[in-house]
Amino acid sequence: MSIDAHHVSTWYGKPPLKRLEVDLHARNGADRPRWLFVPRSVGTTSAGGVNGVTVYEMPGWLWEIEGSGGGWAVKLSPHSELTLQRLPISSWDPELPASVILPAALADDITIGGVPLTRFVGADRTTEGHHDARIDRMKTKVAAFAQTEKNPDGLPKEATLAFVRREDVPVTVSIGRNPGSWPRSFAGLLGRKISLEGTALESKEGPVLSQGDRQIWIETAGGWQSGTRVRVSGIVTERYDRPVFVEKAGEPVKAGVPVSKGTDLKKASHRFVIANATWTPID
Image (cartoon, rainbow, N blue to C red):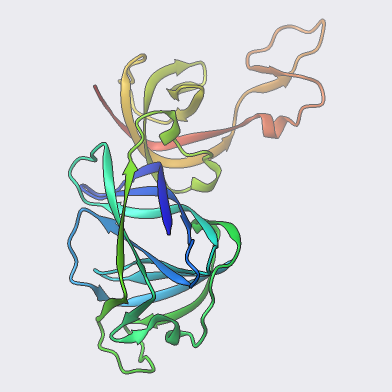
């Protein structure tokens, strides 16, 4: 099995929590199905406790295993490929290093308290062919096992995760410090807290964070120092408040952003903003 991962973005929670989003690509070159397991966090040790499992519908099923020993699991058919986009991985390191090791694992089977994972839903669905799957767009299929519910095999409230014929496959993930570390689009991040690095700028419409040819408006208190490198954290919002207008010959020049005739003015007035923003200068 070949596995690689690309860092997409970092969200900063209550220190020292950080949530990395990675795009992970896996290809099963074996002649038999294999489970791929990716832990929910890096930089921590775990006793392997599990207190819940949720199954998500995609091409096949994605299993979210909750608890101190939790992670993400998917069963790949022979010669199938899968890209899991925006896979969330927590990091508890005080400061993010230039790269982290994602301790992925392969296995012929995964068990909870000695019970095969697939028995909790009474079905075994593998991912076949070549597919991309967005984590934040999946729909819940079934809650397979929950700590507060009686399960069919009488497992304890916190069961142990184990693997049959486990093979460790550590994956190095470089933490981006360039325009590529910004999300491809802010549309899927509305209402969520993110953290970005870039250059502080001023515009007629307010403070702007810029990185390469990308930019996003910032809602912040005073003290924004144009031209400095900063790290900004806040909530992604969208607004339709840019002062756009259709410029007409012979009319006085208006204040705002001129657009061509036939432009949808509402769409043209749209912008993404990081609201409730806090920022700190960086080297």
